[in-house]
Image 1 (tube, rainbow, N blue to C red):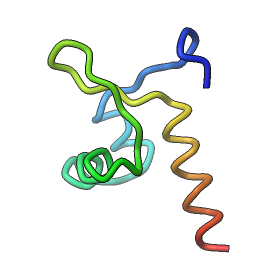
Image 2 (cartoon, helix red, strand yellow):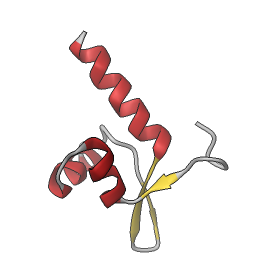
Image 3 (cartoon, rainbow, N blue to C red):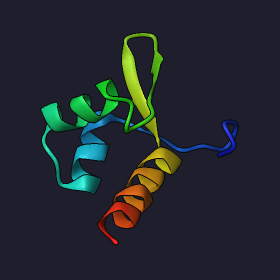
Image 4 (tube, helix red, strand yellow):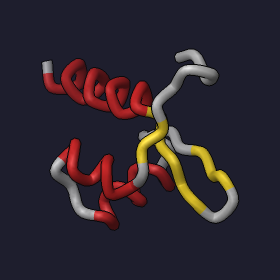
Length: 62
């Protein structure tokens, strides 16, 4: 993941992409299964981290 070109998503955007609720997304962040950064008071999730999370879940299911 290249940090200079990474697209940063908001929690609501991640909720929409993963079809999950707000508390579930924050639980994934807290448990470090979903990487995030804080900018000021805002939480941002790199789009690459969302793709990685999905890939990991697919591997676990296989």
